[in-house]
Length: 329
Image (cartoon, rainbow, N blue to C red):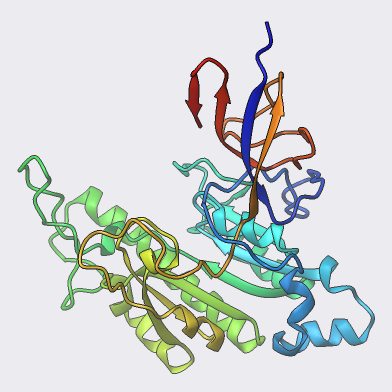
């Protein structure tokens, strides 16, 4: 019996063959997918348009004849799902994504598992900075101990976790129990090392950004307050850049171009649509094809190989079969 199916896919703006290698030597791995639904973007890679904005180290490489597409590295620390790294990779950059071994997120590309509490990790990152052409670094340090949501009752009425610091005690309350103290000291250790690292990046002329909630207590830790001499805040609502959540976010950065992110939500209710086109788009267009075969998909409904003219890494959004049977992916 004929079971021809109509298949709709979202097609990524760049699709190239990926290859894996030793993570300690160079981060390059299979790009599984990114699940954002975003808008159309010019097919030209932004790598081709940034010569005027790159740091002196990159300019020197250009004058020496080094190709941009092969040299521009980005660092993403506390990468989580590695969505940012996956998009940077698709746009032609060479990302190094770092996450803790206990990362609860399923990354969109492979990450290097490193413990940011260890000095050896920061020596590795320093080595990467001085031996590679690093254009940009981003970090989203853990905000659990700095969250102002602590102390707020849970939806079922139970009390939430108690606060661990405040404005008068930015490094942690002196009366914390042993487990709480260990957690705060661990977070403080990462924060201090990160602040020193971005100071080093700034001295080298490398752009960076640090992400946390707008009202996070991370911003009042003394070493971050001192960074305001070389950095500034960019505050925005994530829903204005494609998120379905009204999340008040801040970047502490030295990159003037990131000021374009500073948009506040204008919706009266929880947003469900994109008020502004996302800055980093992922898909060019949707395409519908007919076939009596189903495509080969990964766990995220992404094509693992070309299918009826649709390139790999395209996202399957629905399947329609005859006789009224319908599947939504």
